[in-house]
Amino acid sequence: MNEKILLLLAVVGVFFLVSSVVLLHLGKIIDRFPPKDGAPRTGSITGPVESTKIAVVLFWIMFLPGAWAVLQEEIVIIILGITLLFAICLFMLTAVVFSFAVLSSMGRRKNENGEVSGE
Image 1 (cartoon, one colour):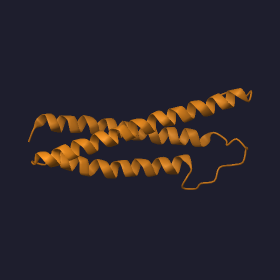
Image 2 (cartoon, rainbow, N blue to C red; image 1 turned 90 degrees about the vertical axis):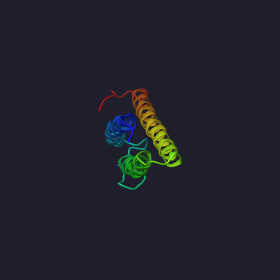
Image 3 (cartoon, helix red, strand yellow; image 1 turned 30 degrees about the vertical axis):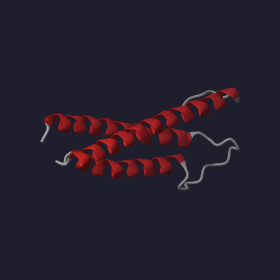
Image 4 (cartoon, rainbow, N blue to C red; image 1 turned 60 degrees about the vertical axis):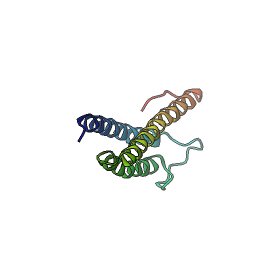
């Protein structure tokens, strides 16, 4: 087995673990902001925390077959695994950037209303 692939898989796994924790934390922070109308949030599946948890679970479900495929001997399966890992890496980066953008937008809206921004 190629040690470079194992090292790369370990680095990607650590990156994905950190990204998952950051994404879950951002979901909790976003959920703390009050809605525009001031009504309390309901705990539905479309809420920030719940949808973030679903995205992270789906992400890890996709990571496991990608990691398995990278460790195989056939070149086609290795390429499929690398492609899957790259795709979910882009998914995770997009989710983190989008969460930061939403948090920034909500903080800006709160400042425009004359309130002090913060957690």
